[in-house]
Length: 381
Ligand SMILES: *[C@@H]1O[C@H](CO)[C@@H](O)[C@H](O)[C@H]1NC(C)=O
Ligand SMILES: *[C@@H]1O[C@H](CO)[C@@H](O)[C@H](O)[C@H]1NC(C)=O
Ligand SMILES: *[C@@H]1O[C@H](CO)[C@@H](O)[C@H](O)[C@H]1NC(C)=O
Ligand SMILES: *[C@@H]1O[C@H](CO)[C@@H](O)[C@H](O)[C@H]1NC(C)=O
Ligand SMILES: *[C@@H]1O[C@H](CO)[C@@H](O)[C@H](O)[C@H]1NC(C)=O
Ligand SMILES: *[C@@H]1O[C@H](CO)[C@@H](O)[C@H](O)[C@H]1NC(C)=O
Ligand SMILES: *[C@@H]1O[C@H](CO)[C@@H](O)[C@H](O)[C@H]1NC(C)=O
Ligand SMILES: *[C@@H]1O[C@H](CO)[C@@H](O)[C@H](O)[C@H]1NC(C)=O
Ligand SMILES: [Ca+2]
Ligand SMILES: [Ca+2]
Image (tube, rainbow, N blue to C red; front, side, top):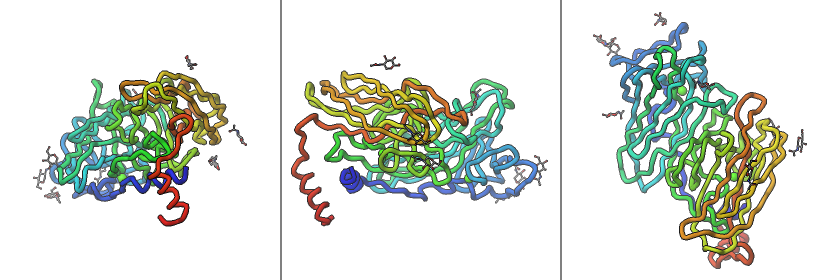
C-alpha cells in the first residue's frame, strides 16, 4: 500500500496555489468601510467596492459577531437580492482541473427559506444551499470542480444568490467566505490497483480552519467531479485524517446523506473475467453509532456489508469477487442503506476507503512495476 501511494505521488501533478484568486477570504475590506459594533452588515456601493472583485445587486460586507457565525472570526460576503460577485483569473501552463473549496454560512439563522448560492465558471454551474445539518458548526464547507483549463485561458468565476419565491425579508441569504482554489493534473492508475484514486487521496483541498470535512454534492460525471475519478450520488463528506478517523492515507469518504447516497466509478474490464474488489468500511470517529450498511455493486454482483459502529473510529477490510461486464465500462459503486444522525444532530454515515480492484487470482505486476519496486526497495529512488 505504501509503495502504491509513493508511485501515485510520483505520477500525480497536484499543486496548491494559494494565490490564484485575489482576496479569496475577503479580509481586504471595501474602500470606505469602517467597523460598526452595532451592525455586522455593510452594503457595497459604487464608492465602496471589495478589492479583487466586481459586484452587482444587493451585496454586503459582513463581520462575524452579532448573531452572524463565520468559520474564522473575520469578514465575508453576503449575497442578497440579485447579489453577485465575480473575479477573473488566468489559467497558466498545461491543462489542469480547478477545484474550489469554500465556506457557506447563512446571513440570519432563523428564516422561512434558505436562498442558494450559485457558483459558475465557463464550463460549469452548481447550486449550494442549506438543506440538512451536516456539521456541528452553523456553516458548511463545500468542494466543487469549476472546470479544466490551461494555456492562458481567462476564467470568470461568478458567485450569485438565487432565492426561491418568498418574501425577501424572510430569506436566509447565503454568506460566502474562505475561497481556496487548487489545480490538479490527471490521476493515473497505479500498478497495484486498476482503480485510479481508489484511496480517495485526490480531491478538493481541506481548509486549515475547519474540522468538518468538505461536502460534495451530487455529480453524475466522472470527469467533472471534484473527487477525482468518482461520481457522487446524494451528498457525501470528504474527510481528512486531521479531523476524522480515516482508514488509510490522508482522506476518505463518509456517506452522510442517507439512503442511496454514495460514490460510483466505472472501469473498462474484460467481459467474463474474474476480478476482486477490496475496500475498507468503517466509521469516521464522529459519534455515528449503530449498524452502518453499504450496498456494493460491482458489475452484476450486488452485496450488502454492515459494520457495527460505536462511533469511535474503526474500519475493517472486506472483499468481493465479481465478473467484468461489457461492452461498456463495468460500474462499481458504494451506496448507503443507513440514514443516521450523531449526538450533535448532524447527519453521518459509513466511511469507505482503500478501494482496490485487481484481476482475481494469478495477477502479477508487470515488469515495469517490478523494476520500479525493486529500485524503491534498493533505495535508489
Ligand atoms: C452602525 O450601524 C447602525 C445600524 O445599521 C447605523 O444606524 C449606524 O449609523 C452605523 N454607524 C456607523 C458609524 O456607520
Ligand atoms: C459616491 O460618491 C459621490 C461623491 O462623493 C457621491 O456624489 C455619490 O452620491 C456617492 N454614491 C453613493 C452610491 O453613495
Ligand atoms: C469614498 O467615498 C467617497 C464619497 O462617499 C468617494 O468620493 C470616494 O471615491 C470613496 N473612496 C474610494 C476609494 O472609493
Ligand atoms: C466581472 O465580470 C464582468 C463581465 O460580466 C467583467 O467585465 C469584469 O471584469 C469582471 N470582474 C472581475 C473583477 O474580473
Ligand atoms: C434552512 O437550513 C437549515 C439547516 O441549516 C434547515 O434546518 C432548515 O430546515 C432550512 N430551511 C428551509 C426552509 O429549507
Ligand atoms: C441490502 O439492504 C437493503 C436494505 O436493508 C435491502 O433493501 C436490499 O435488498 C439489500 N440488498 C441485498 C443484495 O441484500
Ligand atoms: C467501541 O468503543 C470502545 C471504547 O469506548 C473501543 O475500545 C472498542 O474498540 C470500540 N469497538 C468498535 C467495534 O469500534
Ligand atoms: C477519536 O477522536 C478522539 C478525540 O475526539 C481521539 O482521542 C481518538 O484517538 C480518535 N480515535 C481514533 C480511532 O482516531
Ligand atoms: Ca473571511
Ligand atoms: Ca484514503
